[in-house]
Every structure is written in structure tokens, then in C-alpha cells.
Amino acid sequence: MHVNYPKRGAVSSAEVSGRELPKNSDNLNAPCGSTRLERLAYSVLEAAAVTGLSRSKLYELIKSGDLGSIKIGGRRLVRHADLVTLLGSAAE
Image 1 (cartoon, helix red, strand yellow):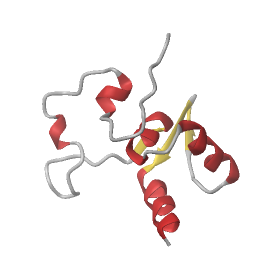
Image 2 (image 1 turned 135 degrees about the vertical axis):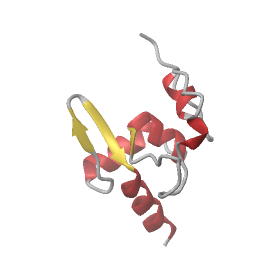
Image 3 (image 1 turned 180 degrees about the horizontal axis):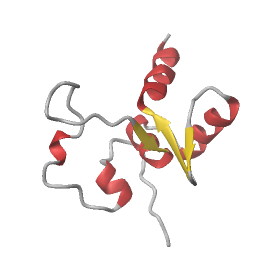
């Protein structure tokens, strides 16, 4: 299966995964306490799309310990909080 990786810039997770989001998908990134759900983790490809960093750079940061990640089964996920921490420390 060939995957077209996103270029730099904002890309929705539906565009990254090639899957359609549910009709109520506009509720995925709302603040806690509302009817919208917040993403807790992203695949490395999705994390690359939302940060504008390349997949290889993210894997490099994971390997060096600068970016935390978790592995569930065969899937590696990057927690939202770890991305915020990484980007916050890069801005300083």
C-alpha cells in the first residue's frame, strides 16, 4: 500500500489517514467539559501534520528522548501533552 505523506502545512487527520471522519467530527478538538472530544495522542504521521515537522525528525526526537511516545501493540503514538512540551521548550 502506497501512502502519500503530507507536505508542510496544516493537514486534517482525515486527509492524513484517508478515512472519512464522522459527521460530528467538528467536535473532536473542543476544550474539556464541553460536548467535544480532545485528541490525547496522535500517530507519528498525524503529529508531523499538526506540527509541521517531518516524520523522520519526529522519530529522531523520539529516539533521542526529546519527544515522549508510547507504543500500543504495533502502533507508536505521540501524546498531545508531549508535543506541547516539545514545542514550548523549542520556543524558549
